[in-house]
Length: 237
Image (cartoon, rainbow, N blue to C red; front, side, top):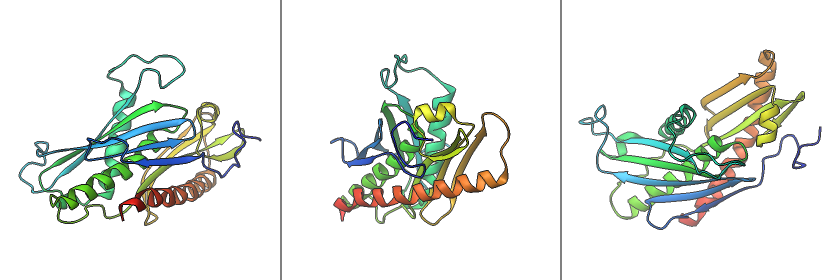
């Protein structure tokens, strides 16, 4: 089955990460994944949530939103959507999995992920770009003497995979995601560990063999995303 953008079944969309896209944020990155574009920026607050206060540890959280014309038709601004809340919790969990919170002091780092344009994969792009923005923030704060050590212990990236018309595809665009019989979002570390697997059968149930094959395909794509993240961060060396 030819894909809508003529990619191979195991091929990511074109990925570009622009480091330091915003001048005033502690760290930022613009990630472009095909036609999907997400701006990730990091802000530091010298406070922590109540459940962390007094522990000496910090916190990493995320907020996610889609701009009104990031999609084909306008989406009203500032809607309290369950989908957005679920995605920002996923982003926060993923980035905390990479972070040694004990090295942050009692500070909160908010990663804002704003979707400028959506063509599928916005949550996985936000996680992948959010990691780069967070690394950029921590690097800048270390240079300023605010953080003594780099708090990131491992890399984090994410991608989607799915079964579309019987074909296993990597990194689904919107049209493919819409037609998928099985749809996975996969978050992994560069130590070959899973942070989160979100898998759904849109039609009939799927077998363990299909799940294993989809996860192997996701790992292949995420390894390539790690390479792209490292390339983007090379400018900080």
